[in-house]
Amino acid sequence: MDRLRGSKPSPALVISVVALVLALAGTSIAGVTTNSVLSKKEKQQTRNIAKDEINKAAPGLSVASATNAQNATNAQNAKAVANGAVGTAAISPDAEGVALAGANLDSNGALRRFFNRFGGAPTVVKNGTGIYTLTFPGLAGQFLNSNSIVLANLENAQGEILVTSDNANPQIRTFDSAGAPADRSFRMVAFLRSP
Image (cartoon, rainbow, N blue to C red; front, top):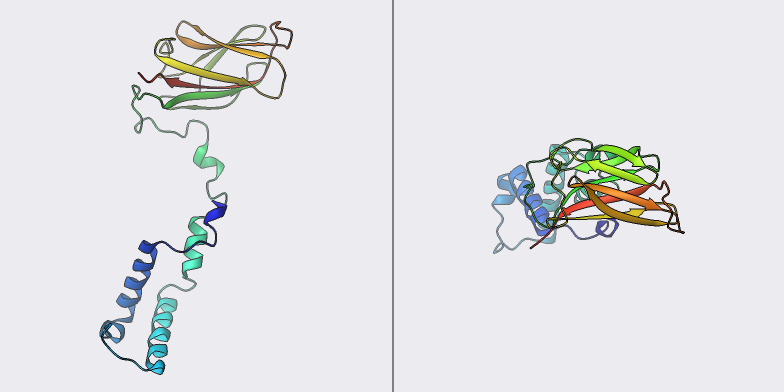
């Protein structure tokens, strides 16, 4: 979003500002056409009328204030992307190649963050050292090797990670660098496989 700061306004914004100026200024500007010949003084008066009318109608309105407010850095706050904020209506459960669910787990199996396009928070069962099975509401039993892809990576620790399946639900297994089972924090995301 930083690259948008200082950029030129879009053509749609320019047209809407011109339309607003014409609507607010009334006949004093509407009567002036491109074929009219105005003196410098008349042109300046026309500009001043337009600026005054805009300032009266919407104090503080300017192209810069409109674009900066709309494109400010960090305009999206945490509530807009909170856990479970993604709705179910936008994506079909059969949508191929679209991330359906994901989670970030602590090494003890505690759920830190998640998203699930079809329900609430996943249930996490820690079956042993470094073994975590996740069941996502609305997607339970739908993660088979033939129809899904589950990706996972370790977070802030050295070691290895393996993705398997337990009753068609994602099972993540974590190991230390020597290959022995070890509790590790991780992130995972699940997709339906494209044909």
